Length: 179
Image (tube, rainbow, N blue to C red; front, side):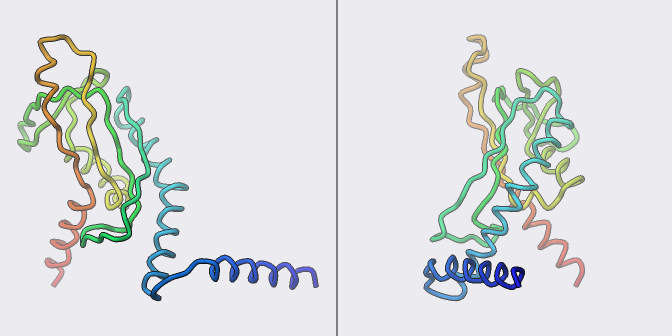
């Protein structure tokens, strides 16, 4: 009997919670439900996995991962929800060096000895945990306490890399090859 009462109480609480929110359409309701599932997956799974992955793959690299939210009033075709993670790499020296194998701009940091680039991050993450790339933005934050000779180079702006766009493009190419 108490099981039935607790289930009934849960369903009433659930209904009250859902009925307390107002929506203008069923599509808006479904979008919000999907978004709340995405938020919980990012907070409970992706954030921890990505953080530990970056620590292990790039020892000594200074970084942080932030959860960000987009406006519900805007929608782009290559977005996979309104919530995403921003991987911020700190202490980057903005003078690009070009990777000889791919000609991608690569950068050094004060604390990590190897060159890093957006595409390298994307490829490394894609090879181990590809589902994260569709919810990831990679940003670079320049080093502030450099010698004067390197300060002018660090005024260059390093563009952020929208991993979700690259993921979307690759999905389109993959689906066109299947046909």
